[in-house]
Structure formats: C-alpha cells, structure tokens
Image (cartoon, rainbow, N blue to C red; front, side):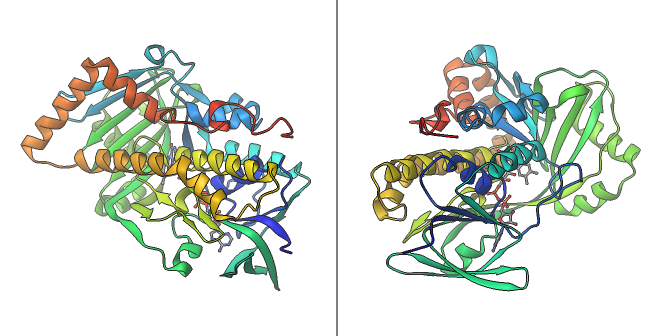
Length: 410
Ligand SMILES: Cc1cc2nc3c(=O)[nH]c(=O)nc-3n(C[C@H](O)[C@H](O)[C@H](O)COP(=O)(O)OP(=O)(O)OC[C@H]3O[C@@H](n4cnc5c(N)ncnc54)[C@H](O)[C@@H]3O)c2cc1C
C-alpha cells in the first residue's frame, strides 16, 4: 500500500495552493519543495505582485485564505488598454460587469504567507522541505519517488503524483513529454514606482513596439510595473540609475499618472510560451507553469494555475467521497474535462496579444487599433473579454464559484 495518496512536487504558489485545497479531505498528502522556507520578514526570491482575477479571489475565499490577503490587496476597478503611439484604446470597468472588482493586485509574498500559515495547521499534510525530487518510476498501483532530503536519500510511494514543479518541470522532462511554444524574444523587467497623480483602482495595459507595459495599482499611490522589452535592452534597463530609468519609463508610459519616482530594485524574467500537449498521464498530472507557462500580458499565468487547483481538488474530493483511487484514470479524466478548454483558450488569447501588438506592419497596426476601438464600442465583446480575464468563463468547479470544496473543509 502506497504511503501517500497524493504527492505534490513543487511548493510554489500553485503547488502549495493545491496542498491547502486538499487539507480538509481524507487523503494522505505530501508537498515536496526544494527551496528552504523563507522567513516572513526577510526579502524573498519572489517580490513580484500578482494581479489576482476575481475568479482567483473567489477560490481563495472558498479556501478560507482571502481574509489574510485582503488587507494588502488593491482592487482593480478599471483597466485602460492602449497601443502606444496609435489611436486605439479600450476600457474595462467593474461597474459594467456588476462585480466588486475586476481583480486584486496582491504581493506574491502575501499570497504565499497566507497559504503557508494554512498549511501549518493541516494535520494530514506532510511538508518535505527542503527536499528535491530526483527521480520517479510509474508502476501499475503507485508511483515511486526518489527524494533528496538534506544528506539523506528517501524513497516514497504515492497513488498520484502532481507535478507543480514550474516552467522547467523536471518531471515533464524525465517523461520526455512534448511541449509546444516559443521564445517571445522579450524579457519582463519588473519594479514598483510612486505616481504623484495616482488613479486608485485604475490599471493600464499599454502595448508598445517592444512588448506590453503594464502599470498595476498598489496601495499608497504605488504602481507595479511589468515592462516587456527586447533582451538587448534588458541589461541597460537593469543598470540605469533610478533617475534615468524613471525618465525612460515616463517616456514609454506618458503622463497619465503624473510624475513617476522612487523605483524599487529591478528584476528581469525571460518570457516563453510552454504548453505541454497532454496534462494527464498514468498516475500523474501536470498543473500550473509545469503544464502551461504564459506571457504575463493580462496577468493570467497564476490565475490559470489556480483554476487547475480548483478543478483538481474537486475531482480528488469526488474520488475520496466514494473511496476511489486518486490516481485512477477516471479521476484524472474528470480533471481534464474541466480544464482542457480553459487552458487552451487562455494560452491562445495571451499568445495572440503578446505577438500581435509587436508587429510593426501598417495593415496589422491599423487592424489592431480598429479592433481596440471596436472593443470599446461593443459592450458584448468587452463583457466576453472581461469575463475571461476575470476567470469566470465556462463551467466552474465549486471553489471557483467561491464555495468551499466540502462542508468538512478546515
Ligand atoms: C513578470 C511576471 C509577472 C507575472 N504576473 C502575473 C500576474 O499578475 N497574474 C498571474 O496570474 N500570473 C502572473 N505571472 C505568472 C505567475 O507568476 C506564474 O504562473 C506562477 O507563479 C507559477 O507558479 P507555479 O507554482 O506553477 O510555478 P513556480 O513558481 O515555478 O514553482 C515551482 C516550484 O517547484 C519547485 N521545484 C522545481 N523542481 C523541483 C524538484 N525536483 N523537487 C522539489 N521542488 C521542485 C521550485 O523550487 C518552485 O518553488 C507572472 C509571471 C511573470 C514572469
């Protein structure tokens, strides 16, 4: 008999969210993460902010985690989308969608802290950290995992292995799974700045010839900047003095928020699309970035991964309710039924946005600006786009509707 029902490899935001979603179920769960935990008051490796969609806020609500994040989350009430140097623009507004907010700009660290606090209170969860998955072998009834825990090597068995080990997933590589995608030839340079004429609740997505530039509202008149640029520019943007960087940013973004100042330390991330062709395999499922790594335009990557979590948790809860096998093909097929369409559609949409808006040819420029203006004029099209960005399209599992997974959830 396998020692675990579910082992999640990868304790990033997606893997640890899944662990927290499973914590009330009668399942023996282990979470394996290679990075040591970071203290809440120390700077961590990931000082990004995440634009959580309304759908993600509902999922965290269903998991009982939202109250811990809400105090530092800035609601997005409106989004202004424009094509730099051209006339096309469009707007999304929470009032038109009759929702409390289109999304919430939330520090990744606050999300992580809320999840980790919940995991500490989970009696049936074993957290193996720092521990690295070295190898795995799929057998008929279970999966064997070889782990490195400090100096010790350990073998464990599980009925289901969940690969949440990120965009460079070693589980995916070991299995030789086919991945589609491409390099965008862009890096995202991120920082935060202060605006002297902030517009509370207003986010901006400005398409430029080197890639999109997003300005996301944060508390206290600060804005999170996600600036996609060509790799040749990245080193320069990272090494400019603060004043020179602000001058560049201001020239790119314009004066909509008045004078920008006080940038925080900058970091760069290379941008690639990676889509695994099949997310379910014998006793194995890939979720989050391990299944789909997207361009950050429109802030969809984590939101998509969190919807994977909501659907997988529901499929596993259903199996557990009937005493079923969490790694059975029927359980995984149920998960895939929920997720296949959303994963493909969201990847297609973000990829189209990232690629279309850097094409310099005049006919394409004219067409996309007409498209933006058309979007602004046609409420039904705007509504459709807003619902997708909010993670509310299609049939949704319980958590994504803001409901707890089960009454017994702790
Ligand atoms: C600049 C930028 C801005 C973004 N903004 C947004 C946004 O606003 N909204 C949004 O929804 N998304 C956004 N994203 C995307 C989002 O950050 C990712 O989709 C999300 O963080 C992926 O989480 P993950 O847990 O799947 O993967 P990861 O964060 O990569 O976690 C994988 C984990 O697995 C561990 N691991 C790997 N291999 C092993 C092993 N062998 N053994 C044990 N552990 C292992 C790693 O240590 C890591 O902790 C952005 C991305 C970028 C680059």
